[in-house]
Image 1 (tube, helix red, strand yellow):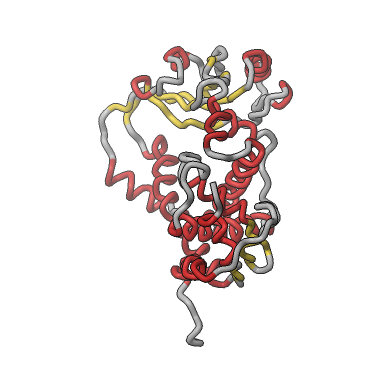
Image 2 (spheres, rainbow, N blue to C red; image 1 turned 45 degrees about the horizontal axis):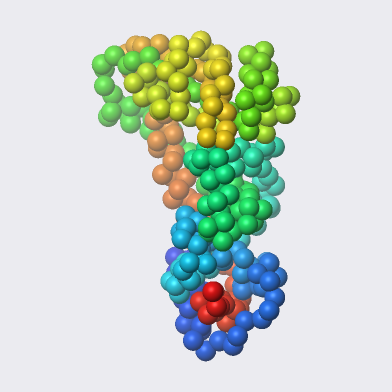
Length: 319
């Protein structure tokens, strides 16, 4: 092997460190906008200054804003590393034909809105120095990243029936298992849309597309016993039959519907009852490990060209 070979685990970190070391002797940045300024190329694909800014905001939880506190060299280095990894994963996602389901972006936006009072999300973005459209684009990229990473992680990762059975034997508790329900949540931007979608769902539609609902598929919240229901799910949902849909539930800027997709009666714990949960508990860490291996190899093999001097703009520009 040549002496220039770099271990996969250190490859991306090296690029970020090089960028940090070059700041002190860098010329002044150009007057181009963040959307035009290329700070790195990954196999010829550009990483823009705005991408690095957005990664910094994401790392900070969108607060405090860049206007209030300039990023440190460490923050910029970490943001560059993340931007490079994101580029590599999204490129692989495009190669695999990964796309977002219709309405998934709007559903994610509404989930964020539910955590704020009316107008609170826009205020938080303003304080963070991020335009709403730029935030939505970052959110869309994050959703594509997660779907792409999920597809990559699932490749070749399996669990055998024997492994599931062994895990069941180790954790088996022969005590009675309480009744539980599996719940799917749908989000809407108005009570009117929720009401129309509820009629469609009660009529047997698996999604609310016909009602003009932006959250086409909803989100599977998993299984709950009665004493496990989170505060946002009304207790009455537990009394619904399988396939039943709640009345619209108002929230902060959104309205929810909750649908019981499965009901399991109380009984003794069995392998058949617990198989899906145990299988997923085994698969999850294996997928994560597989994805990390793939990412390390993919970034190590990528041709990364840094424009490190341009990153100085983030720490030198006047506020």
